[in-house]
Image 1 (cartoon, rainbow, N blue to C red):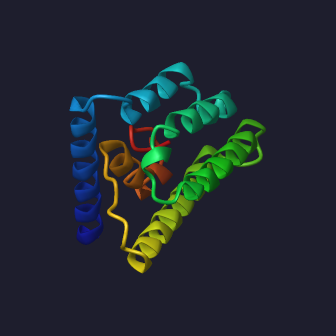
Image 2: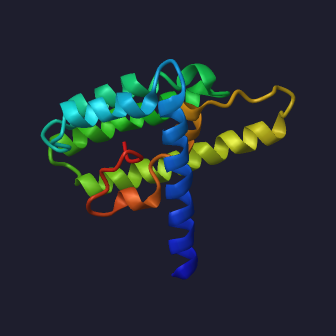
Length: 151
């Protein structure tokens, strides 16, 4: 239990640092784009499809710096599908969050695996990329999981 709490606090601290760095960097800002989605579509159930479309558009900011952008495409396809299911009442918001969390963890691990297998290209790192990688932690699967890292 203590280990889990420590891991959550570490992830929160890393995500906060990324968001602070991103707010200081010039150019497109993923954190701001996602905040606009949360503000424009605050009802995560009634406005699930519109909010998902906004998040998909916002995450396009990360696409150019991803070593494997098709992984983001897969995540966003799932995001759209789950949003339709939430809005139509077929799954709960918590179930949607749980599925996004699991899939995101899977694709981040897939990315790590691919990078280890072909480390020849120097990886482009950006605050937006680091925020995307640390997004949708397990805390998002609980009630109240509507923080800047849950999308």
